[in-house]
Length: 139
Image (cartoon, rainbow, N blue to C red; front, side, top):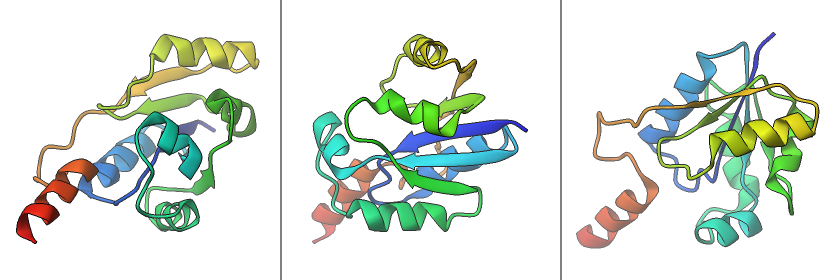
């Protein structure tokens, strides 16, 4: 069985998220999605609008997702030990170093590969920040 791990904040769900998760699921038998904790998202980008418990429930309800869990506080790579993925997928805009992820897996006895998923370009609703800007302009 091939387990795929995808991660993200998933603050305001949009077609780009669905594309990312659908393409991630195609790479394996099981897709586990780690939803960033509010505190971790705040350190990396910004505080989410939607609380973490609601975001994880919404992601879990998406068709490609087999299991959605909340991320860990502290070292974000510790989740690798819990999930033990064969593949980690990254969105086109996620600023993680694939080599670092592979090395963090090796430190934990996990042999994995990293795959970057292409950008969704079939709609203008392809990013949370973009959607927020559009809503502000229309109000």
